[in-house]
Image (cartoon, rainbow, N blue to C red):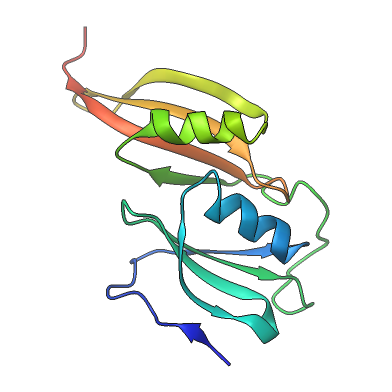
Length: 145
């Protein structure tokens, strides 16, 4: 049985993440990360989660389906899941209050966007299964120095 309802507008790209402990991952995403439940399938231990700023993800407890190779922590080798938010400081404070370690502490970073630099405040944290999550807030653009 499904509880809740699908998002009014589905994201064009959504990470669907296999987790080892559904309850622990659910607490991480709906706690310090600030996501809300769109819908759940309790029998499957699956949740579709939405951030107030628009990001969407799904988490589900591993069941042997869709595993293309050996699954050993950390699960995110080679992938970073980026979540853009309107207040990165608030989420960084919630992560710190939850006593979760930062993989990369909150920082300001400017990157080459081709014809200009794009800036953001960002931090990286690992979820309970080792998925690497970048939480970022865009802070503007500027010309190359």
